[in-house]
Length: 297
Ligand code: GLN
Image 1 (cartoon, rainbow, N blue to C red):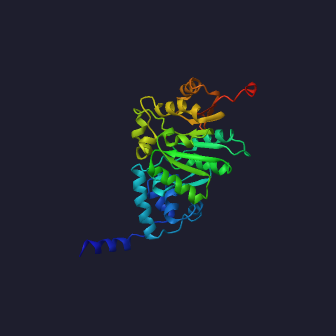
Image 2: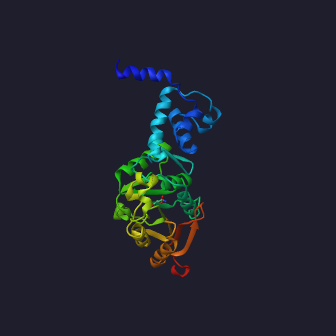
Image 3: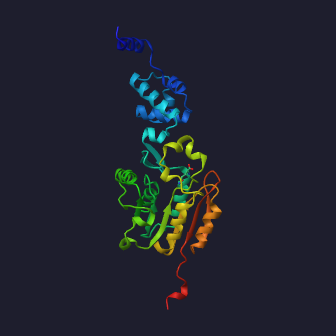
């Protein structure tokens, strides 16, 4: 008998698992298992909890176990499902972009606190990746004119598609390395520049562990001390900021002091440091000094 026949017989004899059994057999932590099974079944995670005793359709079980294996081998859940939620927005992601992280929501909060709700600010997001920061700010400040840059066309395609799907129209996209993405003629004075650049030291062992192995290295690593990108961004900011305009950056867990020094060296004022939800200093903000009151003679 052909091997195919054997497989059919074996299949018929092995009953498909229930939701509960599939999750237990997957070898995944519950949060990952539920996310992948909900993705396969096209349901909410809550549904799985209410239907733990339901038997899975065979095809769903097979697809789930295939994804579970990839997850066990290290692929991030967000790349396997194609989605990650950020700031309440459902963002498509693929391996050309960094997976948005909760700590970057802290950066969005710091940025929004510096953008009055009624104004028509011009905002720049450098290295937008999936578009997370630009999309969150554009959604919260519909009157803002947002420019989102990336040096990767694949990333810009992801960000642009996210903007279209979410119906967020007040973002323009530009390709290029940091400020090089801006044409000299279009480099208006920004009221706020926000960025989550690469900031991991190239020698950091974490780059070769866990989920980070699957993310774009260019979005993670930045030179010997991890500050190569931040140096370029901070040094170039005053020339691109309106008087009184803010620079808001995310940085690594041990970089707050160094980043604050970069801000001060660049002549930025009103420098603050903000902790993320894990209590780690994660975001530095500062601004180009406002024109003093005596200037307008
Ligand atoms: N916070 C990320 C990590 O270490 C790094 C993101 C970045 O370099 N911008 O997992």
